[in-house]
Image (tube, rainbow, N blue to C red; front, side):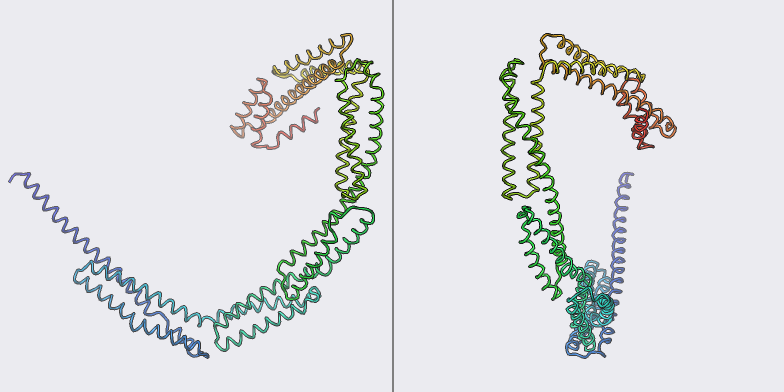
Length: 572
């Protein structure tokens, strides 16, 4: 044989031996695993067999005093005997069956028997546990119920003591609550009798009823005093106060029908009667809530009354002022229309120039109509003063607008000389304002002035030049002059605000950067932030510089901006 053949034969032999060894090891481990599990299950079997069912039954054998319990004991003994005589032996047989199959190397059969054994143990354990729980329900019932009753009695005595110490707080309800305490006392006696007769099912029912009764009486003891106080003292007193106030206001011609006071008070009295009837049977569900709702309603009525009184005062004052003002404005408009022809020829006005006056006349007519309607509603008591007040205030505001429009119209119809003088005065003011802007910019040495400032300065200068040109014209066109003056004034103010804001922002930025230098050693983030803020400052980006500086210092001093703003305002 050559070398290759020898290698092949050696490999085959080695593989065959390896397979045989693997199968033997697998078989050995499987048998070992089955035996280990069988040992554990056998322990469980012994544990189940030693379940103290008879020991528990013996506890109640000597105290049985009624047929019901005796019947149950018979059933339980029969169940236990069935387990002991029929089912426990089956477990022993199943252990032997598994062992036998292992001896004959029937691994598959041993596994199946082991699974059946495990399932049977589970079923018998459930049966034993259920039987033991049923028996303990009786054996432990007395101790458990005694503990519960002891706690309930303690709570009952506390509630009874609280109730009797505060007897006067319960009013006539005292006798009904006292009767309920007596009922609870009787229930405690019923419990003792049931315990003496070993009527455990009855005992459980009594304990449950006692728990509910004491919980209920606890709520009664706690809440009834407040209910009695609200029902018999506070709310009746408040109803009387409301009724008295309502009647007095009606006598003084207050239109209060919208409140439906009489109807609502009758409904409250009806519902209070229902609450009173429920209180006699100690049914206080939602009573406290309803009574507090009634009290809130009554308090709100007082608020409504006071609101109506204040509204009447405001209404009467507003009507008095309104009446005087509308008479005056009606007279002025009548006088203007009487002189309209003279005004048109004097100022060379066209019909279209008088459209504004016609609009004022129309609005004034509508206001007169609405005012007469309000006075009629007042006489007819159709609306409460709170609404009449709002109506007259709204109408008064409309009249103010008309008065303002009329003043503007009269100014428009005024003399050219007045308009020209106003324009020259404002020209002087705008020139002064520009000088202040330049002075402001020179008061603080800015590293760079933004182009925006120079653009606004140029626009303001050009607008002022336009005003000067209009003033030099002859005759002067007043409308055009006014437009030029308004434009120039707005641009001058805009420039002034820009200068102030630029200087303020730059100065605050510089102050915060300088102040923040003390924090540079604390954090690289602060140092980088302040460096960036400084670069932005010298580029003329003062707003961005300020934001960067504030954000950097906020890390260690969150209110830095407010602090520096206060310093800046003090220096102004």
